[in-house]
Image (cartoon, rainbow, N blue to C red):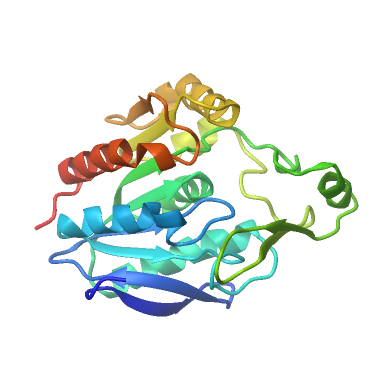
Length: 260
């Protein structure tokens, strides 16, 4: 944590407490960072890097542990809670007078950003990495469950997923809980967004290749001024491509939401 960062607890709309890290800005602009699945507000150092890059431009930066992840409350991942978490973060930025906002989401965070942005008039652009831009998948299980976990999923039991974190040993999913992206078409999802979107994908690994193909197939549905960038050699996590991601994100935000 840098000397300008502050650890805060925010209350989500569902009543749980969220762990956050906040860096103040120099004007009226701010970035909300939403992490991916089985991650937290540091994103294995990736969000530390991005937070520093955005702060260097003069933006306030708020990153939070989503419900059920990191140091935030929540025992089982719940889509309604995740959306409420993002709104709580943006409400906090509103309360501090940051009237021009950016939401940067990785993987799961991208799915949240796409669903929250249409309801937030102060969000001026989105930056999405490893984005989930496709149609609803119903109660299809998460693709990384093993056979025993799949069996538990279809028995409607809690399924613990191990995480490498100093604050939480596992994340829990359950088929009975609302699943983000269960319903709707790609046209409905992307058509509801009215601000320019930068979508960054990699071209390496089956998961990221499939996600990139889905985005490219629906690229015409993105708002005017949007861009899809495919980073050669990048996987879904972008650990090995942080320089490329940071450069593209910083340039996009500098152009669309310039700090005062």
